[in-house]
Image 1 (cartoon, one colour):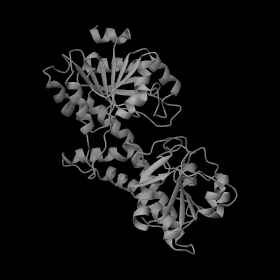
Image 2 (cartoon, helix red, strand yellow; image 1 turned 90 degrees about the vertical axis):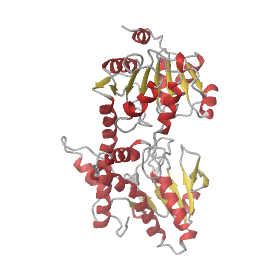
Image 3 (spheres, helix red, strand yellow; image 1 turned 90 degrees about the horizontal axis):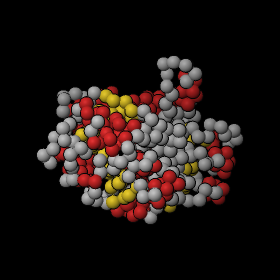
Image 4 (cartoon, one colour; image 1 turned 135 degrees about the vertical axis):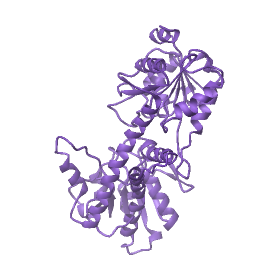
Length: 446
């Protein structure tokens, strides 16, 4: 048993978390809750200052747990890498966006790696969690760390263990969601699995980091492809008329084998599902391989905000007023229900398209998000009321938050476009509702 194993088993290992966002902060709180001294590092000074004041900014993190680990001096936050030498295990949990040309941007990973490399020492364990393309761990992170003169597998240890955070999920959390680990060497994998096992109920080891990196992409591309399938069928149902895709999916779900339900919507948001297909597409090109199927699915999903825009324009074009004078209310701007996360929100994309092309009067309400910026225009969430609903010419449900009273919304609205089938249980006023994929209205186009 080496020194790191002893420290992990005795809870004397110091855990470093680089990146205190949706992945890093929940992980840091879990380690601190389990009794490990945890050092959080983030270049965003506002996040660090909020944590030092005991303020929580991640919805999935329990306020009481965060306050307790801060009070008990188990969790500390810094905006620099000075304490890296004091850490024993270091997780990299930074964003991996893509560029305007849909190419991977791993600059945050490399910046974090360079910060770690300056303080790298023997028996350090570095675990990359940021979603990325295969060979990032060994092809990009490892060479930077080895510039220190230390060798992976001998002097320090390196592994990839992808995050599996699902914002707003109350059932599966950091603690009870299984994780995958791929180490550069067997010892790297064993130590990374041991570290993860201190806060995660089940750890699955794979043969190398590339397998773990590809596994993460498969998870999200699987969802992207299946959502694209039902999105395309939703467009067809609208074109055909008389067929409701939501009813079709629910009926197919009665089959107890060989089928998994996915549902259409106004587009895909969040960090992973929208971005990951393009990470793999980019890498595939270097092998003279074209990911036709995967790329087509991603493009289908990216077209959905344009389709919803056409639904909006079609409905307001039937009003006895100019398009520019129409008032449109969007309900929900988070990328999914019951969260405060607007990353790549399809609702915001739809609003941008309408403002750019038609300069419409747009309002929004979201119980979780008080303010957004749309096409350089700052908008504040408007209080949802009978008066607001009745004065708007069109209400567009883009996020199906549980807080909404859909009977009240439909009753007091003139016309409703429902992109999430949120009004499925509304009995009265159904003649006012146009549900995406219901075949209720025909002639929309992407």
